[in-house]
Length: 388
Ligand code: TGC
Ligand code: FAD
Image 1 (tube, rainbow, N blue to C red):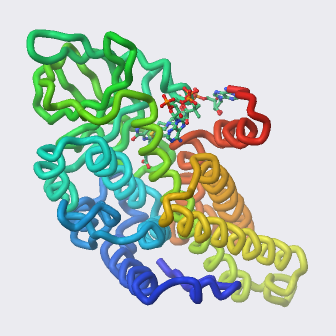
Image 2: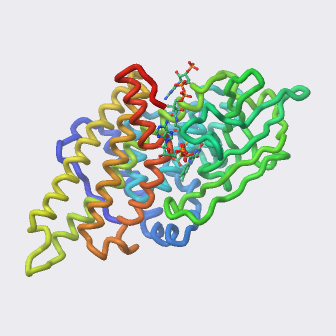
Image 3: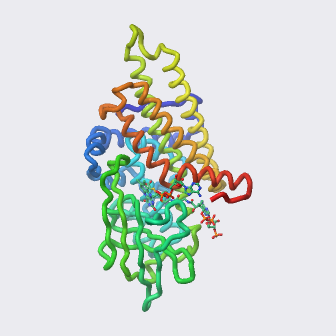
């Protein structure tokens, strides 16, 4: 994997010394740990060996969680930069880090009891525990409020019944933060542990996208959960949706990494490949592709950087996050498609990362809210009217 800097608007000047250090070190660490094997793992639909311990060792799990709970105590821009450097290698790697950080550690930190935080967050940061986040169901994807997974009062606790589908790290998780409706119709977060009676997992195979990531289903057949297994400080859809804000923000940065990786390969290839006695880089049509890619990457960088500043100040709205997630994923997918064309037939082989990024991004444009849903969120913000 080869990844050079793309900094057309001197955005590095807006980053602190710590941000630059984070970027350079995660870039190197991720490249060494995963760069060489990623094509083989993705082609083989294999899990990445020791993925979570390696991510834990890099300090990318819960980088924004305070240090007293084992996190990195870093700011939101550092988190975004980490996601960018991981996704420059493969979206599967960023996925694993964003689920653990934004979808498992974040809700425990934000809505958990002091005991839950002390018990779980340091182990999640160190990857001694692997977490999963269960919101999507077989019948409810874009509309999670319709969820059918239920919590019914039983003795001193509850019985959890239902199923979640398309869950990253389902088959390898030690714990799962699962969202369910209680008898009053309130949305509750439940922390399940592997091995609980009635809790089963199943891996989803045969994916053409995110092939190096583990995806699966979670099944709950009257799983007995104690009161202390519930997140005490949230009883609303605001719980899971606020986790999505954090993950979507990270994705807005992450996909820039994938786009830059594709763009760099396309530039290099166009300079080296000759047709009609000239480098293909000399043809206007190829230059148009490269110029547009660089323009779009630069615009996406500005969006994510500004969003990071707002997020650091606790001022980023969910709607602003939707705009950045939607724009930047679409941008990265477009860059991957155009880059693939620059490489001609060579664009489809595993020696180059482009096709793998492109296929991965087909999932990224769907998960964490589809491209359509994020547009409707913006539409609602403009008009005040819901078109869901
Ligand atoms: P709505 O009635 O609008 O809101 C219900 C309550 O939630 C609040 N809220 C939010 N709070 C924080 N952040 C947000 N983004 C929020 N959006 C809404 C809202 O204020 C209200 O609060 P309260 O206190 O009044 O109860 O909700 P709705 O049911 O109409 O749904 C709105 C909609 C469609 C936008 C939402 O459901 C949605 O975003 N759907 C997309 C589903 C989605 O993104 N699923 C992702 C699953 S996780 C995943 O994909 C992980 S991929 C992992 C990987 O990287 O590998
Ligand atoms: P649907 O909601 O059925 O949508 C199908 C199509 O209809 C889409 O194009 C959508 O945009 C469109 N549509 C839906 N509603 C409207 C509307 N009102 N107006 C216009 N168009 C509409 N979920 C988790 O909870 N945890 C995870 O860890 C997780 N990991 C994932 C990993 C992968 C690899 C994938 C692919 C998905 C993952 N998901 C996860 C699930 C993901 O969040 C959902 O796939 C996503 O929210 C969309 O739901 P759906 O697939 O059911 O599509």
